[in-house]
Image (cartoon, rainbow, N blue to C red; front, side, top):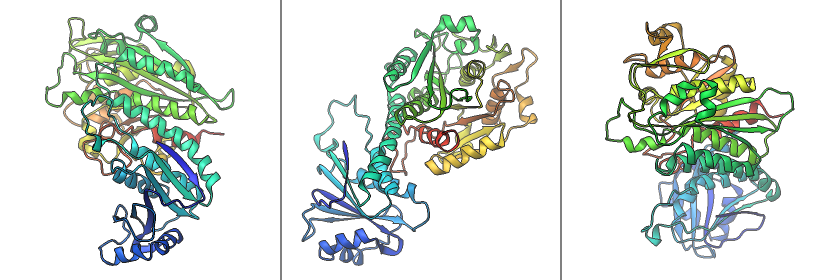
Amino acid sequence: MKFEFTEQTNNKGAVCVAIFADSKFSDAANALDADSGGAIHRAIEHSRFSGKTGELLEILAPVGVSASRILVVGIGEQSNDMALAWEAFGASVLKRVLSSGETDLTFVTGDLDASYGARIAFGAKLAAYRFDQHRTTLDENKKPSIALVRIQIAQKKQAKALFSSLNELAEGVYLARSLVSEPGNIIHPESFAAQIQDLAKNGLEIEILDKKDMSKLGMNALLSVGAGSKYGSKLAIMKWLGGPKNEAPVVLVGKGVTFDTGGISLKPGNGMWDMKGDMGGAAAVTGTMRAIAGRKAKANVIGIVGLVENMPDALATRPGDIVTSANGQTIEVQNTDAEGRLVLVDALWYGLTSFKPCRIIDLATLTGAILVALGHENAGLFCNDDALASDLTAAGKLSGEPVWRLPLGSGYDKLIDTPNADMKNIGGPTAGSITAAQFLKRFVGEVPWAHIDIAGMAWKDKRPDPRESVWATGFGVRLLDRFIAENHEN
């Protein structure tokens, strides 16, 4: 799909215009209405359309316009910052016509601010994502037909330049979505690591540690999770050093359990197929690093992902086994299905000791309990630093990927004590997301750290947000990219 920015109105194919709440017309809408002989006003007068966000009115073959159809879309109340509203506008229209048979789609925006024109294109690109690689009998009339998306805007050059960076961000989201969507027989620790290695062509410096390397480093917590798999566990490091030479980096860490059976603590069979997505945190970190490198961010950022497959086998870790993490703390593994935290603590240790970061953030599809607390509306945020928590919360609001901070405390921390080792890997029947975060907190010391539990956000069956794709959302890429842009770029 090609995106084009132009100053000229071209009414070929499908043409779209935005209407504000209470049917307030923009100059662009008035001009298009005049060209169509008042077709837009007449259609609105004979409908219940009011301009509310998400409302869509389609006018087929209007008289006086060469377009085949006009789409009138509500964008809600005018406000000082409508970036997300314009993204949703672009996304909702693209989804409506993507497989309609139309090949051209034009957004008529007139003198709209260039940044909003770029956001329209960004929203449309996010909505255009499809995961059809494994479908061989898809009907022709269900395949995407839109080949060209045109943004008609007065500030053509400015909008095009702004979209250039947003397009790199969209490519990062695409990568994360594809990684999460692929089944476990295609994306496993070794193939995931190979895909990361391929990102060297985008300017990232890549290093891959294998089982032998990690054994020498004492990363036995991570390795215990992959002990039952035929695929070798990996630790992938992605480096982007676009900031000042001596400035401490931000380190991003992702949980990459490419398939999670639960190990010996086997999960129920119903729904286990979704566990191909248990590497959503690693996918988000990988997509973020792709986006940061693509737009040549002026920041120092390190991405680290622990890649394992959690399988039951004669060599698999047993409930009750005690493993020693890389920082020397011992862990009683009471439940092998609480495996993500074992992966993260060794990856966190590697990030802390190897790169001395100013801040460290991990993302993981860590607990089902977070869905009980927050559903599919917010990711859970746990943090030992108020400033970091504030920055991530703000980035979540600006990017459209919200987080909600949950508490940490000594009372929760006691729940992971055990007489058999320094700690156990589960707490109890309550506060499961918090005790998982407390477990991680024992390994980060005083460095500003945040843990983001994205188990309710990495994939969704229902998609009220038109920017999201069929299953995998790519959640975390826009959040982390915005966080870096707002707080760590020079």
